[in-house]
Image 1 (cartoon, rainbow, N blue to C red):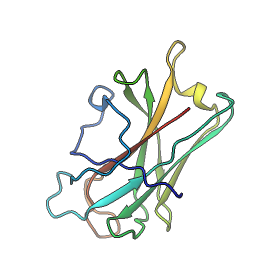
Image 2 (cartoon, rainbow, N blue to C red):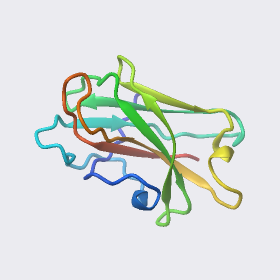
Image 3 (cartoon, one colour):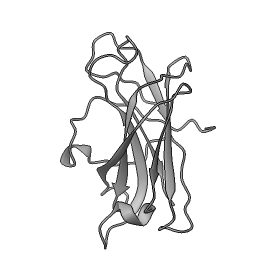
Image 4 (cartoon, helix red, strand yellow):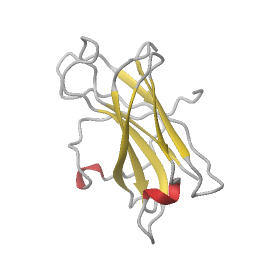
Length: 150
């Protein structure tokens, strides 16, 4: 991955209503999770351009520490961003586990069209790292990143 799109914030509880997403945030913002003394993290996602909405699509995210070291064996939650800008809602669509390079992937065989109900539109995706407890013996801070799907 070669982009540096990321966004951070405070912990959001899970659930569709709690994941109201208001804007595509592509620059870093300071923040740590509810875990006191956790190590700062950075999650990176790339904008995705699709030409066939029913073709399989792979969403990826890369989790690193603030100094760029990959975080392996971490669960990443992926969300579809549904709606128009300013009216976006996030719906969880799956999870992935980071590899040794800190990269998690989610393959959707039904493509972008399979992410939403008829009459709705996917405008982006989010990836979220929100662990409670340790990953590899260390506490890491919550982080989230978003990118558009065009």
